[in-house]
Length: 72
Image (cartoon, rainbow, N blue to C red; front, side, top):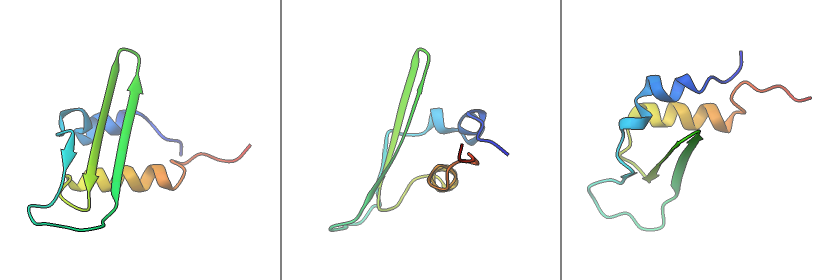
């Protein structure tokens, strides 16, 4: 099964805030960035440690696993 860009739309990605972070102070945590470039549309959502919608993590895991791509 291959990656489908429709998954971003179905997850609500294009309606999310640009940045998420927890409501408490965090020091030295990682930031995850998802950026989508389509014809005429660009959207970036970042998460500093915590706070993004649950589907953000589903999409990040999908992409970090190779999104179903098979090696040539």
